[in-house]
Image 1: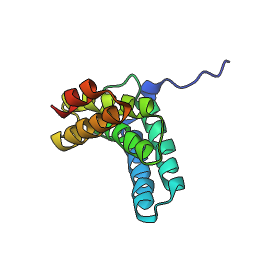
Image 2: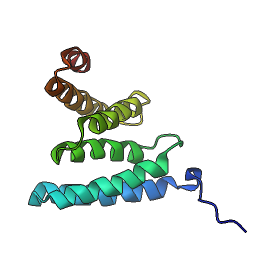
Image 3: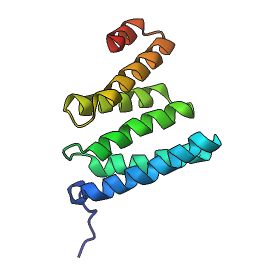
Amino acid sequence: GLLLPVPASVASPAKIAELFDAGQKRYNRGLETKEVSEFRAAIEIWQEAKALGEGEPRTRAGASATFGLALAMQIIGGKSEDILANYEETLEAADEHVLDREIHLACLGNAGKLLEEKGDYAGAIDRYQ
């Protein structure tokens, strides 16, 4: 028989939560040690968590992984388009009440700062409001 890839819907919310936690450990270690490799490891883990959640109802862990991804990418100087896309996705999750207001506000502030740096002042003001 043919070997087919397992569809994303088979991914358990528990696996996504486990990946989120693993990524958070590496991210926190990066904050302590200032080692870029720790942030890169967190990004890799969180990208996997995000991919597992594609097409599924958003979970808190999946949305948190997307937020972490944006933060870690911003720290290591990733592409601003990718970082903004992750912040926007996190904002959608916050609008759906998957994430708390604190994360929502952090996203708006960080996205606004990135847009401001790019010279998109209208976009930045929109986020800051």
